[in-house]
Length: 338
Image (cartoon, rainbow, N blue to C red; front, side, top):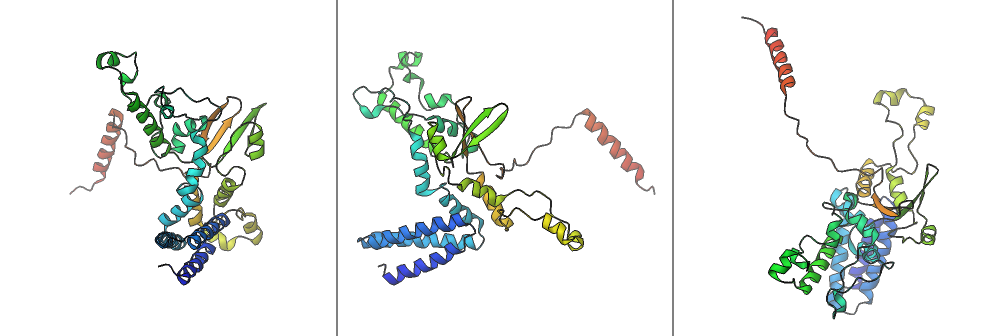
């Protein structure tokens, strides 16, 4: 049974952990989330549901404590929750992209069934599905969007397989198309915002303002025009000058040290900057180029890209073997003789 004392105790402890978070956006997000969760618990008359929600808040509290104590996995988790990589906010960002109001409904696969219409891939979703920068797995080929890989050849009534084995079940075709659509969009990282790129007279102009983008007839997504993406980049910042060597820190004059001061928006903690660098690699940016009228996906230049991993050296050729023989001969001549 969740008593008022227990609820108030969790609220106070949760609030203390929220105040310890290193960024204003995180503090605001989890403060609002905490108030909504506590309000839902108090307003619920079902004791089992209240207990379940209280357990979930206690679990979230442990994540916050671990994140504030420097655990990388826990800190990445709260970043993913706050920036819509996980949870309810992720669905809210992706939901508008799963339809395209500018395109008419596709024809029904089964004439008598309204729900048999195949899914519609919006231009934004196509760009996200076919780009490696917004995918957790390998990007898709464009042809798979019109014909899923698991759809057999006999689904085409004009194919030899259809004439040989008979027509494929329309209901199975509908199920395969929708299952593929659902499975693949869930592997996509939601975009943070849409950037409109205009190129004129050799100059490039990027627009992120939501009102301007809406006036151009382009859909805004995610945290459009709220400055959330820019704040994350500002936290990482750019190191304009390399750090002074240890000896130079004692010898350098005060004026030189002031000139070498870091960007004021850059976070002081290197650990936090690395976490946000990793986050930026999970925040794809939709770029709409007005000249071509197409979408593409980009990542922030401050993002930490995945390490390519170990690379295998090429096989030695005759030249390499000759040099190796010369080195072995030179080392043999240097050995002392008995």
